[in-house]
Length: 91
Image (tube, rainbow, N blue to C red):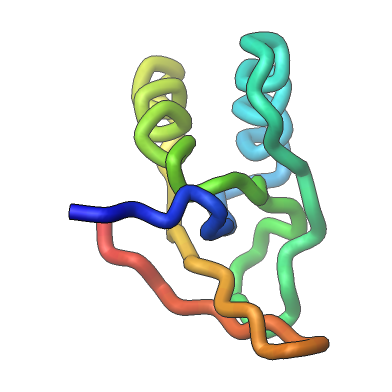
């Protein structure tokens, strides 16, 4: 099985505080992720989400579970020229 580790995803949390908390914990461990504004096309009360490479998803899921924080949704970013679309990933 082949994986494309350049694929990026967005992780949506229940609140901005949870997204910030997980972001800070992962950054302290030396991983390259971004805290970004949630795209308008994604429906959620949370306004911030974590953008990361697909290969980091399991590590962030473990960190979230360890801190009793639920990841609400995960979206794969589909690059379409100047615009992105988002595909919901079941997990």
